[in-house]
Length: 443
Ligand code: HEM
Image 1 (cartoon, helix red, strand yellow):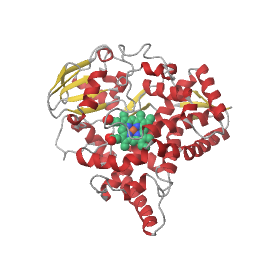
Image 2 (cartoon, helix red, strand yellow):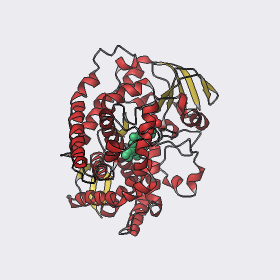
Image 3 (cartoon, helix red, strand yellow):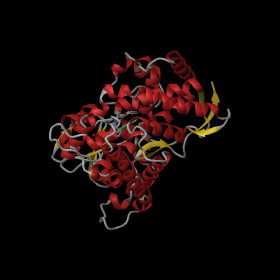
Image 4 (cartoon, helix red, strand yellow):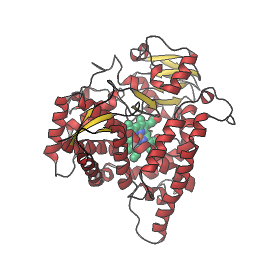
């Protein structure tokens, strides 16, 4: 792909179920905007930086998240920060923003390094030549980081299972159901929703245990760790003095585990794959990692690793689609956007757009080295979104990805050992279909 001609309606329904990336045509990769009647009414596709700025920043209040997105996310993530709108979103964002200030994120570096070293050492102990699934390893690694940082190990019991339940949720609820596409009545059962029930039950039980564990600590008078979980339970919005209800706390626990580790894991998985296709770049990442070994973490000391992660997210954006719904009529990129229209902004398309990038399909991390990156339009590169709904974990994710990539680069090499090229599939997040087999060797 991209395909030369658009799919018919049935083709679109099938593609949305199998792999939504398959709907994009060559025109999407060359035109700045396309508009017309789609499966869910009038839709506008935007790949124009100025138009994107209008929708996501300048007139963002006119563009809440669309219904279909909410239908997919809300059963599991409830009214957490990713899904909430209006006053609840503002209150939650204000309560949680202090957890993600640059100073707070920098203070997490040593905990991240500890978790990263443990993962790298575990891989280094394995038999050389062994094939492992990089996607699975990276998901485990980023889950471990999340657990020791934002939750101070307070995830109540066996760690990996929460991550697995989320993957099950993404793989079941993340398959777009034709009933949702055509707004069939809510009482008709959706297959994905039925199949995601065990995961939803798991979230409910585990969230109750996590909250009970931390509340017990707080009630015992012990100073609770200054982390995300404590902020969710104790913090009050500075403007309104309001906190979060028990239900909102639970929704945000699932949201932060859901949004906060598999995305970064995918960015790392694709980084490892791309590095194994570019030996010179890999040498540079290894040299940089060795030069910085033993020092306190400073992101500025890792320009190459950072550029690799950013270029990997250009080619394989973990969040491959941003979608919104217009409340009132508007105009963006010279195109009329009537009230009710769905607006689709696809980082997958935008990041490979023929008019915005040179050699758009090639892995060239030097685009993101200091100096060169200033030439990139702020609205042509959106792995973390932009505007008021920009990823709250942006700094956290970038720091974590660089720490993990460098820790791995010092100890092991992971050579891609699967189908070439690996096929990306969009299931809420973008990941390699069937995993990413890599052959392990020690350094
Ligand atoms: C929002 C991408 C890591 C938590 C977003 C959005 C994107 C994104 C594109 C905006 C969605 C939209 O506008 O529709 C990513 C990528 C990551 C990453 C590519 C890793 C490479 C993280 C981490 C956390 C996190 C580590 C938390 C620890 C969130 C939350 C939101 C969000 C809670 C919703 C923010 C709001 O609506 O106010 N992320 N994210 N993400 N992200 Fe991330």
